Length: 220
Image: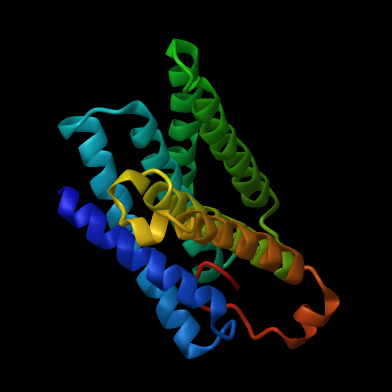
């Protein structure tokens, strides 16, 4: 199971960065986005199994649920009609609600320095679910809101995966990666790309030139 987790995560990170740099809305971008989404969902599912049953660890369990929820809900944002929420949308909201509840519960029971991480992931889940509920009730979302919603959820999950690998597992990496801090650079690059595209898609110039968002990817 751990092997599946590592392979899926590595493929997801490569596909995520590829999608970030490809022309948005192009066939290659959509293909990279499809690979990213599939790989991340597999990675999260395997991480959940490991953290819940093989090597129990609450933080990894929470991160897996939150990441799965954000990837799935972002996928639904660009693949489903925004004015017709259905069973899948409500199922992802339930997963997000579970993550928010677990974040608060783990934080309340934490006696170490992990409480802040539990609160962080729980808050991300809670705010995202609140946004989901609002759009489900309104049954309306603008094109820009749709792009931003898709972007930050996919971009944030790419950052989580990248930071988990290059920072969380730095002790297992070769010196040529950790010596010049390449691992830190890669993690910060994913965060920088998220911020860049979050700002870019809000610009009038991008909205005029953008192709329709019809498939998956970490950046619209």
